[in-house]
Length: 281
Ligand SMILES: [Fe+2]
Image (cartoon, rainbow, N blue to C red; front, side):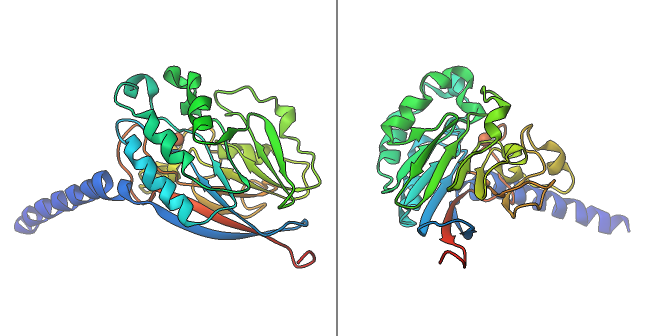
């Protein structure tokens, strides 16, 4: 019995080391493309939206990776591109080693005839990041929607972007939506989805959770950051979580924060095709 235990210990140590090495150097380097289709119950022209979020550029996700992200986005041939916030991880810590020009150039190379939009994340506020966030995104051709919306007439959809709910200043009354068009709502924290009402049909796009970032049984659910609500990652049909009114996609994002590890939360961009419902087709 003792001999078996003795043999088991080094095997377990090796297994833990292998998982750590995978979580540190393998999984964070992936960029997966998730593909989904959403049926709008309002009249829309079919369009392809690419959503990406939580790059957390900094010492653990260098600006050099921005070009790979841009290539993955362009490979989807999007009509509309939306960035969900947390561009930078910790600007005060990383500003001297971070090459913002690389990020601007890469983002500027993203092509989307319907437009490129972004919202604020909580990390875009801290450590002086709030002074540069909108400028970096603008240099990359992204319009930051701060409690604003834009009607894209060619597709019959309206893109709504909210300020970050943890660090920003969105009046709760703004979560009451008014629109006759299909809405694509971008809000960094997915908990916002529970507060939205008033629209006939909408798709909510959020990030923030990093899909748990390091997924361990029981523990991860308890360690999700404030603002996550009941969401972790993936597609949540309308009404599936605490009665949220609109379909919600929560992306795992791309970079890391706190610890440079990812486990069972593969970095991703998301391609969502909006198609008209049967009665509108
Ligand atoms: Fe984040």
